[in-house]
Length: 154
Length: 154
Image 1 (cartoon, each protein chain N blue to C red):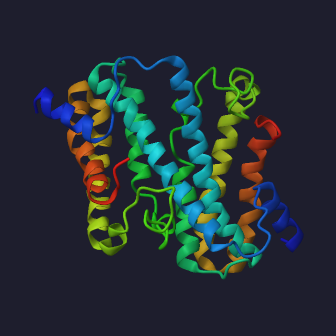
Image 2: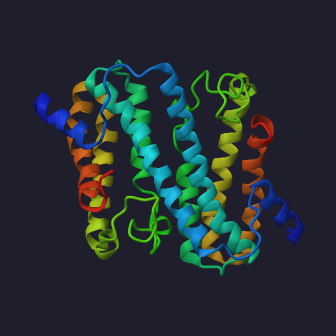
Image 3: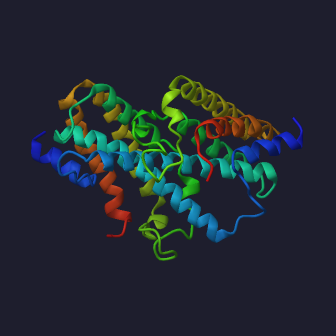
């Protein structure tokens, strides 16, 4: 493969990077990326929550799809999205407290707990409304544990 | 588990759904969710593209993390994000052409091709800059194939 075809591929992918990315842009991109991950969590969790509450009818296929997505999302490698300097004391467009970066072992443990809770939901969601509802509390708790410790109030 | 603790879990997860979600809100949420997936693609692809171009130094661990994320993202169940009525003729905040919904078999084939390209990148990215560069063209091509067919120009 020639350099030209490699760069044609880059252009197709829309990667018009004109030299080293400024650190400020890198921080902004990282924040937007993790907020995108959070939005995808919320979108899929929202479907399960609506079923759990009876706001929409339980559907095993839809529940399984949403739960499977949560399980995948919780296994994304998040390192690049949580760059130093992207905390709420350093920049204005995030609620991520600087304490997060001081407690990475705890953050990792909470991420593992979330992955365990999404896996449990993934096992449960297709097995009826009761099973879904039973998995909802631990999953909400795993989300909330990190938010409570490391997210500033709105 | 009681109803109360189930709902405590929902509250922790921030799911304050007060009855059936309006169809318009559901469309808006679906569009934001798929745009979030696209942003996560771009974030991870951007790191690989910057290495491929030499804008940042090749790093096998970082490349593998980004490529692994692309592979995961391409296996998300996208059904709920591409709801009918969320095309560019029906709503203003999307570039997804209505033709997409008329060609779901082709869209599915293109999604499979993207998953194959991200899997190939995932195999290659940690094996040196040349391997990463060689996987970049097919991956960019897989992204571009869907954009070219089903995304309106900006």
